[in-house]
Length: 68
Image (cartoon, rainbow, N blue to C red):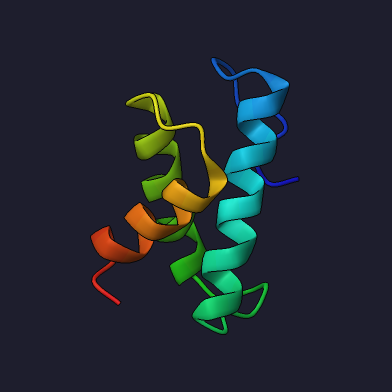
């Protein structure tokens, strides 16, 4: 789970973030070593820090913010 060591979020939120991250990376066909994954993670962290907890909404908002 890419967000497992991230402080300030409970387990359910980290799971939602991971689901969204995995979905965005899959949609964008990003490989594990693709540097763009860092930007995806940063956007999801930002959205979750603003209070979004739904993985589907995190996915949609991240895709929108990333302009893809």
